[in-house]
Image (cartoon, rainbow, N blue to C red):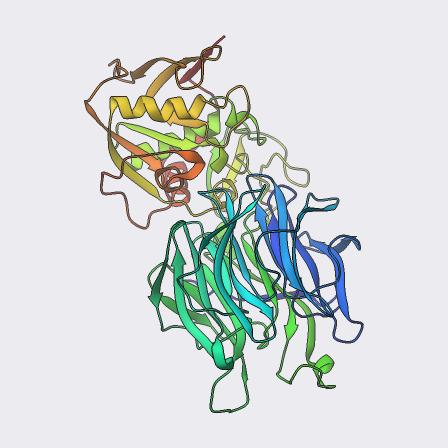
Length: 531
């Protein structure tokens, strides 16, 4: 396997800090950084964006100065969500949203005011999950809350022990929130790993990375990556700052490398799926008690990136050609059949051998060719700076730009009546765009927009000419994205069928493009809307 290395990008931009929060804004294609503690000039409230080349300050107003808040990107509402944090004299319990231009406070109730908590956005349930933190010095919390964009709801007060400064991320490939370590009762650091499945916590490992608090974690399209942290133990050897890079694949932790950023804690990370890179900023390079005059000397303000998957050169590989662009704009694929939707659905149906296939429009995040920018500017690409003439070169880096979430292909056995129910759900939101709108393969459907939601389908016909009745009990083999199969966008898919373990839609699509050579965009009347 190709060794993947961290690369230092910049040591200019935001001033050095600790306890800041970062998330990737997929709508505006920027990593967003907010707040933190400068240790010398006090707490911060500035907002910065990283575009892959430069940091730009975009706001100095919004949430009050604070450290150890948490932020996530809410993809359903296309906003960054921030909760809590620690001010000069208090913990906060306020909720804020960033729309790319302004911060707006949207709630001041819900979880107890706290700092050092963890948050992750659940792509299936379209909710932000919050766990733990510290409500005041030494008052640790062990509660779980969900934010749906309107209100906070407490879910559990059982699961991981109360803690602060743990690491959390949403594993989009396996549809689970992952939690690691943190500061436990008595000042000890933990090394336990827990998964949240939207209903309960399950401990899955107590081995892997060394016990630590204030590490940072991000989902990088295939696995969860964790870096750094502070190891605190009793009896009292001096706490040790860590610098290892670890990956969680859903079953076990694996250490990837020791080469990269210096050892640190209280840093922040976020994954940029468009550039397929994990971005790390700041932190503390050593340990000293809070208030120690030597702490500012250990402060970091550097930016690092860890490319995802294979060596960057592998992403430059030309895997096929496109006679024209397969469009995607964030709306068309959520309203109607598209050439890109047909392509992806065809790919998973061919690979699985299923009769029919469904992929949701909301899972398609870029056109083909994508916004990915290969270093070879002699390639034919529909972008300024390349040869802007068709047929266009498709490179391997286009595929994860289109399908960045690492969703697996699932196979299921469903009846004809169950297929009708899935398709009724797909078109229920029309004429409003919906991420759950189904792009299909292996059949055609006709629906009537003027009919009531839930009763819009008029016909379903397989490619072999067989009509599928609304009450049919004949079994059909369905290939479907793991996101939809596990409840994403409100789908309810029967849990029968073996699936295709550990095979992502992105891998399937890459192989399909390689096999089929030059691709021509076009639709084939798979989805017909009647007035």
